[in-house]
Image (cartoon, rainbow, N blue to C red; front, side, top):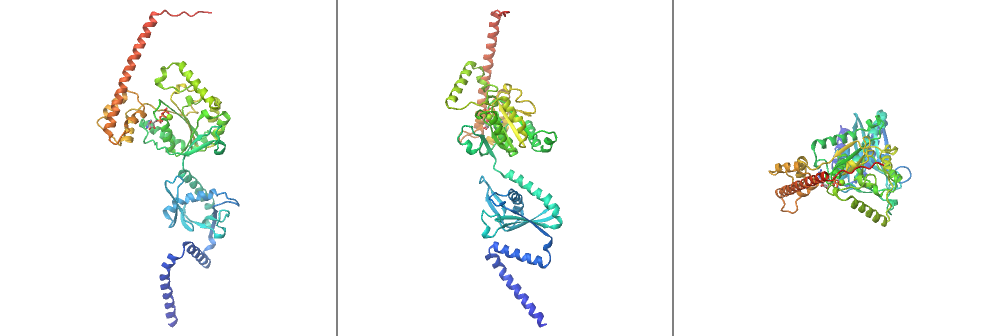
Length: 496
Ligand SMILES: Nc1ncnc2c1ncn2[C@@H]1O[C@H](COP(=O)(O)OP(=O)(O)OP(=O)(O)O)[C@@H](O)[C@H]1O
Ligand SMILES: [Mg+2]
């Protein structure tokens, strides 16, 4: 009886002390030390109760080998764990993303999180090595440990780890800061230092939602893009490199460049803006192409005037201009270039075709090649044949559907009594979305939707008037020519 009393008093005193000490322990003992103590206690308890024999641990250090190279597996696992930890871990670590736009949360040091995969429970823990070896030269610095029951060894080491690395890679791709690359000219001082491409963060805000164009066409393009991104196995099956060519053509200001940005944002791809005129020769072009990564769009804008492949770009209104003047202008431009010491590009059509379509193209996966032009008829058929340019998109003048998107973008307006008149005028005159956008953009704080829409109506009416005058002039000219040809006798062709 006495013994029971003593035991009872010992237990209750211990319990009371623990209840009193526990909050102080939680508050004053640093969590690293607490973790260490708790882990050690857990190990002894496991040993005592014979629980530890079935557990397997795999350690993934942050640095590999002797040197300073960072382990890719470690980074991929951290990415994989970041979303799981955000939802479940008690202690998280916050870091600014590379573009400082958001916070990236990850598992804090000396914290653990459990995951259930295909019904099997595993535990991931993040540990920082001891102070003596916790420096960047040590491969014992930070590490992640995966623990699981031995009976699932086969599944975890094969299926689960594959899954973790794949997921981690995908998350990294999604979170990466997208880039806009431009090719350095061969004579640039910076080129040997920076490589063939230099880059800036890609932050163009255009999306398919803000792009003014026919809605059905827009949906068709989106579907085609999605099909392409999911086509890895299909392309392998039909033995074709995983790439797709898009030809965007249409008058100036109809949204060809905007469409490229919308595609890049839609697919979360990088953009390589290739300036052909600064590429020295075909070999250089091939190297540039080989230097591009997958999940990217390689763009050659204004292909009709990029090289001496097809002739110079002309504006529609200038079409009537004297050809001799055009030739003189071209030669003057060339002279200025030569004086500046710029070497003229020696890239040829066949060089370009080889670079976009030759053996190299199988070197990196998931790539879209986009050509833009104002004059599709000027292009060499070899350049735009099917298989090379798989999808042709005509960007056309602004019609009512495109106008509605622009009005929503610029005025946050979905209906107005002037819409009917604007719709009618847009069917009668050819104006680019860029012109419409310019009229819709408020010029001062007083400019409300009403003022902007009236300005647009006025400008469309002026366009209509100009069109009528132009047509009358042309009719007159045609009539004059017919009369003249009736007067002058036909020249006879001399036979030699
Ligand atoms: N379809 C469109 N939808 C929305 N905005 C457009 C559209 N087309 C043009 N814009 C507006 O006009 C501006 C010029 O368009 P963009 O540069 O895309 O035309 P482009 O067809 O590439 O012209 P260019 O042939 O001269 O290169 C853009 O910044 C955008 O604001
Ligand atoms: Mg453009």
